Length: 178
Image (cartoon, rainbow, N blue to C red; front, side, top):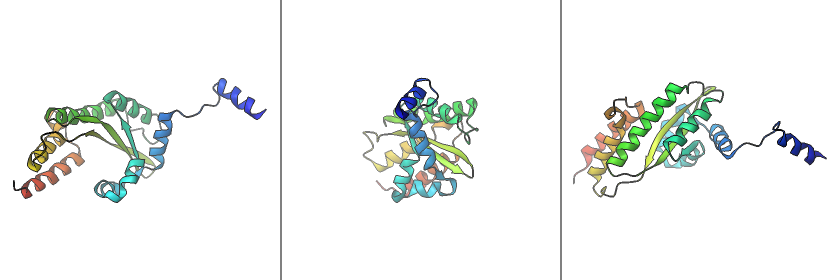
């Protein structure tokens, strides 16, 4: 009898099972990285599993847009307005465009869910493979600086993390002797 009632509730949409996307989002929120630990997690290989659990992947810019819109409906993600979503999409798309220009094939986008107090924020980034001509460390670093600076090149502003990474790359560049 209980199974019949459950099936009827599902049939009449009073009870629904979460979709695959909803399950992925819930998992990432459950394992959100604390804001004060974000830099440590990024820089430490031993935290890769924590980072992976808090990360949601999007294959295309359209998928990223859908993901951000879904997140904006959840309490704690109120900051994700249409204009903020557009800004994020433009910013990450600039990184992907420049990666493609330098020969590093884009592989999609990722969004790390970060928790600060009762609220959340997102740390999105474009992902890409190494370029075929990155045989020289100097060329790779120079191309990475260009990719990181892409939003600025496209008339947007770089994020704080982009600027920090650019500074790290510039310091690394000084140590390369080819």
